Length: 117
Image 1: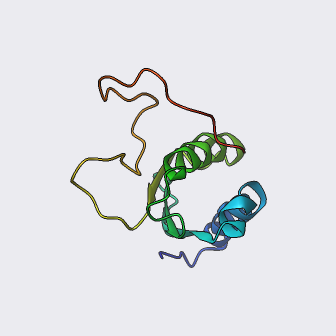
Image 2 (image 1 turned 120 degrees about the vertical axis):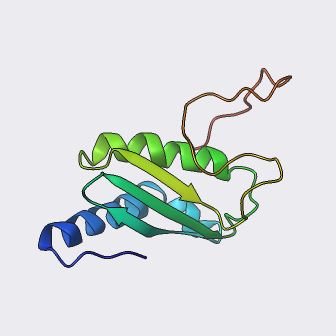
């Protein structure tokens, strides 16, 4: 985890941590965890590590999408959110990083149910 020594940086990191705790208690209730892996105040980019039960969970892509869309609205300094589930890259499946809002995986027209948060 990257930390900044500036008071403003610590405040931003605290606000991001509080955001995760306040908006996503389900993560912890279901045996998962969410922590700041990297925070770049200059670019407004934050990387969140989802761990525990989140690794390999089928709903984690929806959780990541909810974190991304809500965090940039609630914390103005954050412009981009990346997430990592610790499952590693490559080899198909859904990417834990969300460069866009849609997916062109082919046959799946139904995106399934919305996340319960």
